[in-house]
Image: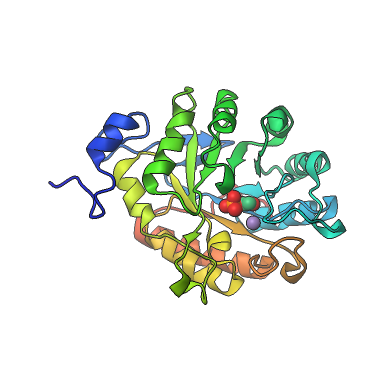
Length: 301
Ligand code: PEP
Ligand code: MN
């Protein structure tokens, strides 16, 4: 078997040598772990859902209640946000410590685990107090001191792919987590930068091909984020279903009760109705193709 990829930038032998902890030990090697009773790499297809930003306490409570009842396993939302430009009006202001507190209240009231981004080492203790999964954002994918400090907490980590990073760079960053003895690592593909020929349709392009590519090289689960990738809610459904068909181990979705008025990126979130309908369709597809399920008995209405 030729173990070199067509691009020849990366091979299984190269990964095994340079990133031994990330590399698959054999063809069937796949990480299996649980985070807050949710199974990764098993029969469940975990869904992460919530607003882009934790805007207000009311918003996060409303979203937690609704996405949980519709099948989400984790509540997402950033209190610390890496926004593309530094200017803020009141609406765009990060909620930071307060936002983390509200996530904690939502977690307690609706019994839903939390994933949220950590941007600076000094906030790791604060964020870790509430987060069940620490999210390393795209922009920090190669911030090795931050990654190492997060890894040392032994909290589960989601490592989002930088939109300009190769699969090799991404797996190398994941190795920085595993080398700290932290094995609960989830990769998240969130769209890559596109050449100018494609810019009329997309800011980013969901790299579906990286799903089977990553799965050939690593045992770590790989989740897709079609909301950030498409930047356009009308395409979130088709790309989510395509991602599941491609074998993704989970899906992250931006969900907002009033998407057009989302404080950040109002073009990308879907509303509760669409989320519920999409979850049903994703569940059907995952069952047919992989005997996996999203909707299980743990859901409380
Ligand atoms: C996010 O998920 O809130 C986010 C900022 O995503 P990314 O780091 O992929 O841009
Ligand atoms: Mn965003």
